[in-house]
Image (tube, rainbow, N blue to C red):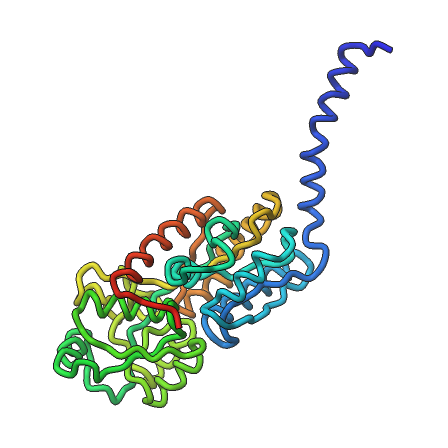
Length: 325
C-alpha cells in the first residue's frame, strides 16, 4: 500500500523521534532505586562531609536515597576501581578528588585508567587548604615557619591523609618551592591526622578547611596561610602562601564521576541537579561556611579540569620522586 506523502512524512518523523523520547523517559525515571556515592576516604573528613551534603540534596531532588559508602584504602584506588567495575546505569557514583589525578602518576600499575574509565559528571567544590600549626609551634607567619624549618632541617614534621593525598601533595609542593626539609607523617585519612595536630603529635598540616576551620576560629589551631591563589571567604584575614612563596598554589577539589559508559542523559541530569545545588542560596552558604568555593560547570568543563590536574601533579610526583606506600 502506498501511503500519501504527508502521512509518510508524519510517520517517519515520529519514528525518528522515538529514541529521543525513550531517552527522555528514561532520564525522567532515573533513579529507580537507591544510588551509592562511593567515597575513598574515612567518615568525618572533608570528602565525606561534602558527599553527605550533596547526597542529601540529590535525595531530596530525585526522590531516591543517595547513600554514602566509605571505601578507604590505597589512596582512593579501591573506591575508584569499585565504581569503574560497577554497572554503568547511574546508580553507582564516585566522589572524585585531587587524589584521583595524583594516583594516575603515583601508581605504575592500576587496574583502570582514571581519565579513560571514569566519566566526568560535575564539579562540586574547590577548597583552599589551611597551612596550620599547633598553637605551641613558635612560628606565627609563613616567613617565620620557613626560617625555623631551615634552621631545623628534618626536625619539623607534617601530617597528611596518606601518600598522594591532596594534603601530602600540598606539603611536597611547599617543600620544593620553599626549599625546606620536612618529615612527612602519613595517616589513614585526614581525621586521625587532624586529631594528632590538635594534640601536638604533629607540628604542621595542610588541612582541608571544611574539617578544620572551626578549630582555627576557636584558637585550637593557628592558620599561617591558605594554599589557593586568593584568600578564603571563610578566613578572610589569613594570607595566601604565594605572598611568601611566589607562584605557589594548591587546592583540594571534589566532584562526581560515573562509570565510563553511563548514558549521557543520566550524566546530564545529575550535572543539572548538582549545579542547581551549587546555585541554591542555603547550600551555597553552607559551602562558604565550610571554606569551600563553588565549582560549577558542564561535564566537559569538569573533564578538562581532570586532565589539567593529572598533568600538574604528575610533574610534582616526578620532581619529588614520590613513591606509593
